[in-house]
Length: 249
Image 1 (cartoon, rainbow, N blue to C red):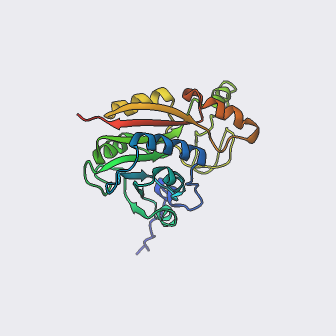
Image 2 (cartoon, rainbow, N blue to C red):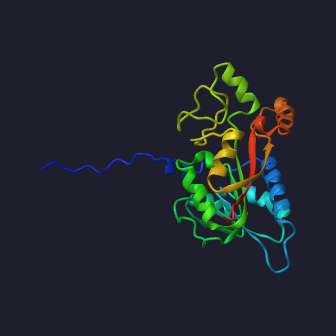
Image 3 (cartoon, rainbow, N blue to C red):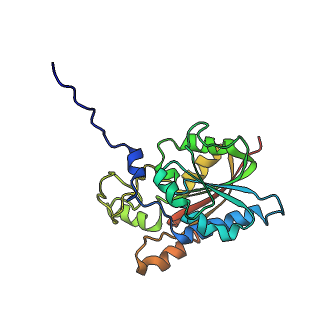
């Protein structure tokens, strides 16, 4: 009689994101710019009726905590499926709950949220279409989507590609960086240009209101003035900040 062997656990993408060593925080400049866009869209909080803002993919909660002073009077709820991230997020946020970006996976009723912060998440998803569908489900008609993601066509990536170098933000392995500058592996699966992001979000049932640029905290210090300057032309910026609204039909 042959002894049975226990099945070997093969690491999956979920295991990668549950690893506390994987960076989950976003840069402060991006968080502040995005919060200003949302604050302008929502306007002052009405007395007794705070708007509900969901930070989906909140990570360790630092981005939402950075945005909170600009969104006073509104209720911010962090959402993530990584238990490690939620544990850390609860040190920054009053509300942080578990949820998934699958069909019906977010623990909120249909048309129950006024706004969604979706910061540096979409580039990690296998199925971004399902994610935008689920966000659209929980947003009220006319509700706001504030999405940010790295820009494949950032000014330095254009130069790197011309030189035959793998662009920043792109990754060919979950184990190490190959063929491009940088050392952190963060699990990017998809990258967008400004044009592609606009078209994709519009095709998912949203009205694109605005698209702005933000700097990237990982740019070497001597190049940061150029990175800030590129924000004036979002198609060249490091980070894309898109504001869209759920269509009412």
